Image 1 (cartoon, rainbow, N blue to C red):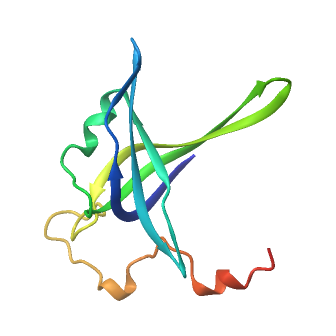
Image 2 (image 1 turned 135 degrees about the vertical axis):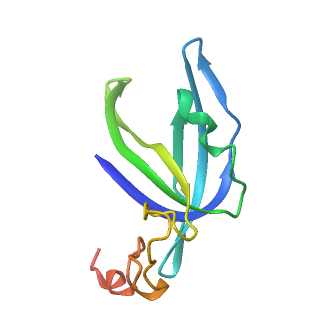
Length: 125
């Protein structure tokens, strides 16, 4: 399952060597969502850890990621692990949405939004 989200790079964590054959690096995006700002944490693994090297906190990014989840049993209770596995990171500036060089950009008002609308705040749950 592949998703895209746009937000501001809020925090970048150091690369961690988890085992001899596995390394990871985590980062957090700041994403406005109505009256509440969201701070989802994403994970990069193996050779993808270096994707963050060209960015700094405050940069506007577009992140492509997979949503994964796995159950595990601890002390007889099943618990669930969810991960946002990033695999592509791009600057969210002009031309970063895959348009060829020289292609005409749509006005900012008509750009697709990755955020919830205020109408979502009327949900009963």
